[in-house]
Image 1: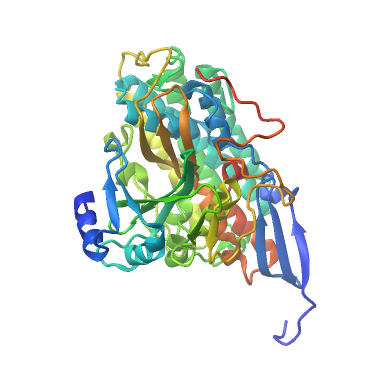
Image 2 (image 1 turned 30 degrees about the horizontal axis):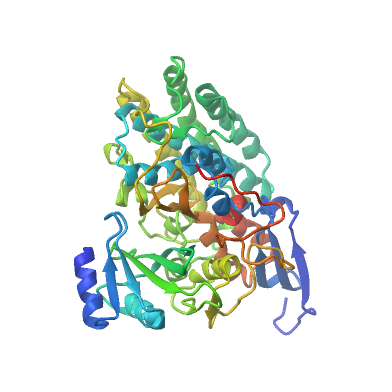
Length: 156
Length: 368
């Protein structure tokens, strides 16, 4: 299914809730309100036309004024991609967990949570994944993070 | 043992230092006698913050780091990183470079599956295949050493091509290897495939049904082992994979044996691809000239390739400077490992070793 058709299906289902953004045409993505994320993911999985069943990646990006969470999804059966994005505040960010929709989201969300400080509401197992259990130096993937051994190279 | 007799449940730590976890993985097992009731994987022992480091390095500087994702198949890490950048910056890669890359990647796939086969059979108590596998792998590593001077972490691919052209001796030696390797796979199969002890350890063990596999986004040979025909080389051809004829081996029963057989057949197919690529290898440039200060245009791209352990993808966000703004690495092992707790429930601890081995997880790829 082409991105236009997917846009139409999602627009019919969630009118005025999402806007498509074209990022250099390589990676078309939908910006959505974070409140409808879970709803939209459930729909994308259950809808016979979309059947999004495969998680490529879930991660966050620090845009310095806000955080952006990205869901790169795919349908093994229909063979089309879907990329969802949502804006989150930099402090005390919260978003619904999609682990109940795709089990594969579990570890991706755990990783994003500990590295960016995003809380995933309803996550079944919110322990840290990669960092040490007693880690207390903040959220290292934030761009203004400072660690005691971390030296930034001068910009070129 | 009659149903009603139960030993007291107890916890066992398997790892972080355990020979059959091939790296530092800690499994917290809840056991009832020797039956596994629950397994909780703890990862992160090899976390080197590769995604954070990427924000602080230029594109060229970051290539060696991608070697250290999956160190037994480093060519794939290299390629998975340069491919999206080429796409973003519209770099045209010379024909010869594409052929060289495919030859390197498929040789690396064989080497990687050989390591897997060797260690997997060692875990099950068969020592001979291990020696055979390393004998053949040695020859592949010699070929790699010839082209890039390295045997493990190659740092060979560049944006727009590869770092060095093939030396003259390479093609004849690679041809010799291809011919030499064909009957060797039969040799491994003679020892293992229909060996009653091996069958007893693998047939019907660790069933991974299609729904669970997709639910956990399992990819690579583990996914094809349960009969789902999904291989990015065929379904989303990248590089020049659409020019070769090869088959995608599939499993039926989705047990440990099927995942073993899929990888064995994949070695044969990879060998076929190398053979065809060597035949078609054109003359010409091995690298496009790109500016010394390379600044791809601002944008975002996600591309993925079929690595030996499943889908390896890079999501790269650039902002028009010499460094990437954000790099997200998606690896096959990361998702494949999440399915382990479901797979090993109810099996004996010795089967856990076989099941975990059949998933072919490499830990640095999980922790990044």
